[in-house]
Length: 88
Image (cartoon, rainbow, N blue to C red; front, side, top):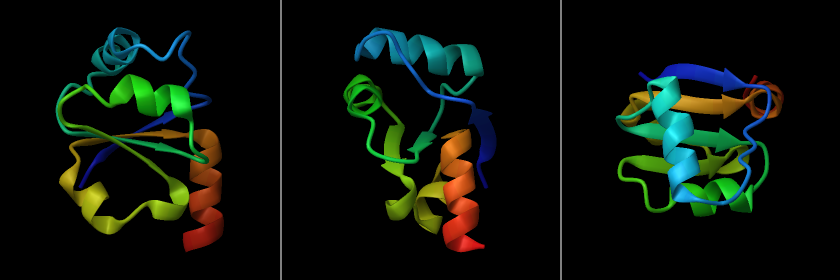
């Protein structure tokens, strides 16, 4: 099961892999990581695409396999609220 890291908002200055890698490194999420947002965040997706072992998803496509397969899950607060609404 993944360790859950909750963010108020996952905003990066620019859709750069280097910036996203730094954010994940500072969180200690340098192994298999699942990034979950409420809606598609093009900047986060673009910045995460080239990082090995990082997968991005939105709440409505979230599945058990992705959660179990990840070591860490970085989730926005809005996504947590939507997960509770949809899956509760």
